[in-house]
Image (cartoon, rainbow, N blue to C red; front, top):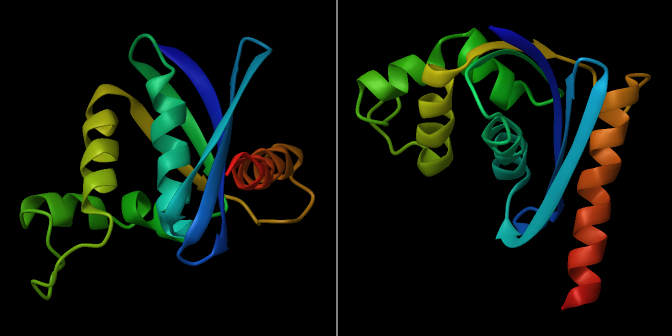
Amino acid sequence: MKRVTLYTDGACSGNPGIGGWGAVLIYNGKEKRISSAEDNTTNNRMEVTAVIEGLKCLKEPCEVDVYSDSAYTVNAFNNGWVYGWARLGWRKADNKPLLNEDLWQELYSLSKIHKLNFIKVKGHSDNEYNNICDKLATDAVKNFRTSL
């Protein structure tokens, strides 16, 4: 199984507001950078979307080291929350609706195709690729604004 590194980040101008996401995939020394933006979204939605969109670029099942500064995203897998949500019909343990259910379902489906290892990185620090993803996301927000 091929091993891929995926760095991701999300950004939002207003929460909700215009949001952007950025991702960098690295395989065999080659990089692919992707990003986009949308209106009326949240930072958490953009963080999860970045991972989804990065994984959707893969053409076959891979082992993926996912680096994110989003505790929301990383903890959902590393603490097993996503498996509990799936077991409970995409509801939280207190039976309240799960926020961003559509994205969690999609990411959960992708996690059945790829072997995902989530690694939490410190945001806005000295991690080169996290900083690149942050710039991709914030630039996507700026470009979206100017296209309106």
